[in-house]
Amino acid sequence: MKIKVKDITYEELQALPHSKHLPPHKPSIFFRTLLKVVGAGDLKATNFTCTTDGMEKLGKKQPALYLMNHSSFIDLKIASSILYPRPFNIVCTSDGFVGKEWLMRRLGCIPTNKFVRDITLVRDMLFATQKLKSSVLMYPEASYTFDGTATPLPSSLGKCIKLLNVPVIMIKTSGAFARDPLYNNLQLRNVDVSAHMQYLLSPKQTASLSVDEINAILKEAFTFDNFKWQQENKVSISENFRADYLNRVLYKCPHCSTEGNMTGKGTEVTCSACGKKWSLTEYGFMQSESGETEFPHIPDWYRWERECVRKELVDGTYRMKLDVSVFALIDSKAIYKIGDGTLAHTKQGWELNACDGKLSFIQKPRDSYSLYSDYYWYELGDMICIGNSKILYYCFPKNSGDFVAKARLATEELYALSSSPATAG
Image (cartoon, rainbow, N blue to C red; front, side, top):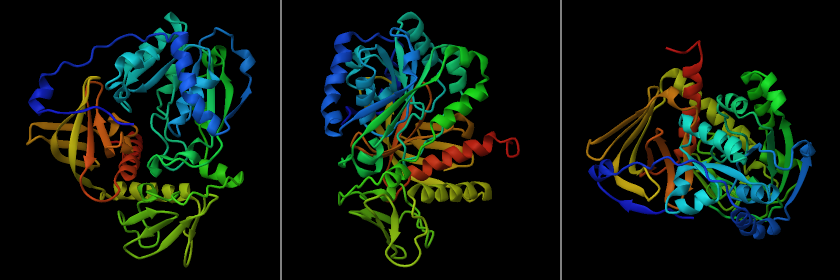
């Protein structure tokens, strides 16, 4: 999938009008059917099945909030199949509207900027459920999982659920990540996919529970480990490209602690600094070719990288500075390439300077609980995005190395540290 790109100057960007807000559109049965038909081929190829729990509690025409974990591009195809023929609006990233706003609105999509405070989104969700009598599908993790485990949920989600006052349904997939993990450059594996749909909370329950209690229930519902699922269910992934680009996730060598010298190719991950190699087995384990296997489980390796980043932040040694190409999004007509610059990240947050000094943007640690960072974004490259509700800056590092995962980890840990009473101030 690609995106429309237009080269303009920073001055031309400044002169462009921003997109106007439009209320959600209730998708007609034609477009609901279209979504279902488009996804049918992939679902058939993965032998898709779905189980349910408590769904008889949901009225046939009763709007609900569907919360779904985010693993791969097949997620929407799954939802479009199992929710059919119910009308539902889809909360999606605003860049998904570029070049196809008319279609996206007819499909019921509600645009929002990822990891940015967006009061308008809550109003749009209320409009959909109360005025349109339509359900809402939301991926509260906002971004695909990197290591196959859950990513942080916004603390505002519990409050949003209380405001909506509709049933909350959880959709959890199995096999979607194993089939198409984000790091693997859209190379599909031969894996069966399934989903489980559960009636999680009634309006009466959400009214009686506190925001913290709701958030705790959601955190438990969004606890999963796709590699552990693969291992426990003995799901074989025999493709010889299964470790391609795994260095995007496993960017730090646990043997010599060097960063940015890992290479994922074929079925192996190699550190060019110390020469150590690991194989990714067909059942999802990491296995050293010689000596100790420091982390047989990939999420444990990723968790260790998070701990290392947190230590750097606490010790005051963390710093990331990248030469980047900068793109901007302010409307749905195109993503605008506006020039080059530097993107820096320290304990003070993110700072972007570009376009010969004309552009300077700062995102403080408390501004976002996570980071919109992605691999092979719209086939343009690995990307880090910062911004606010009015504009987003998509930064593509020119430097060699793996920055996306560490950037997200550092943003999340810095937010946690800055939010902690013991470290605040």
